[in-house]
Length: 371
Image (cartoon, rainbow, N blue to C red; front, side, top):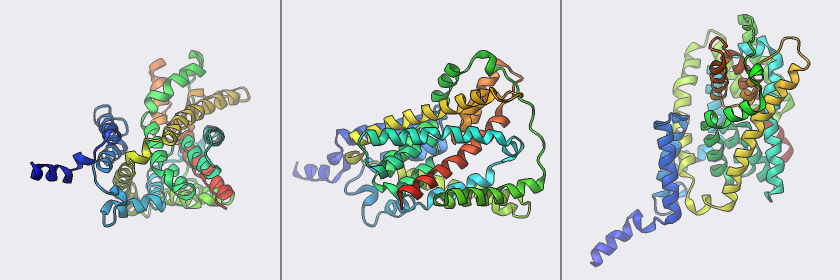
């Protein structure tokens, strides 16, 4: 009996309390959502498995000396992984629609209102100003940017902020449609937009160069993210670095996504994750995502008051930087009402503008709060 008791005490079961069990269940739900519902499986499966891994363990989990997870997690806390993901995103992004219709960048900017609304909300709930800045960036619906900024301003909140950001990114198909339907009429949802004009190769090459210079001058705090994004796009558009672009948008981003998801999930030990503070972060994340979606749609409606050629206000919802899921949601809603209404290419313009906008907003917050 003593031997059996000694064996039991050496297992993780002896250390698995109620809170750890809850976190394991949450991890399994994430895995199920990724596999069964196909909600962002490339994110939710690694994060979900990481949550299980981090909560079935003795000692310090990812923080335990000598653990490989500690070294992988350094890529999160040091802000190494997010810029590498931006490099891959840049290498797979086509800015043609945005270049063809530059006024749509305003929709990406409008959706960033969720960031500053959440920043104010976090401050009112008692978070200090650095924590509020880190939490606010969840409103951009951009996981890598959220991790990047929180690692600089509030490293102790990286886990909850990252989980909240990626969770709401995965739930885009559930969260956004009711908001879009509430704020638009059927007549507005039926608006068709003309196909964008063809963009020359030279313009596609010049855009990332000029785009980086302009945005880096405005928000130097975000120049690493912006630089990687636009550098990846140059690799794609130049036509002479196809091998590098291919590696960036496939092998590199896949490797970093696996490591990032697993490390973020494993950092969510129950003893500091299941706290009132973390629950408030999740509530603020939901609030910010709804505000960002609504702001994009409402600003599109405002633009229509001034434009002769109307835009479909649903594409404003794609101003959040959940690429490309928000654009797909808008396209699907357009197809529900009119099978011949193709909104995907139009929605991608504010969608990629949202990626740029969230990085600029992170740079502004880092420059103001981090100095």
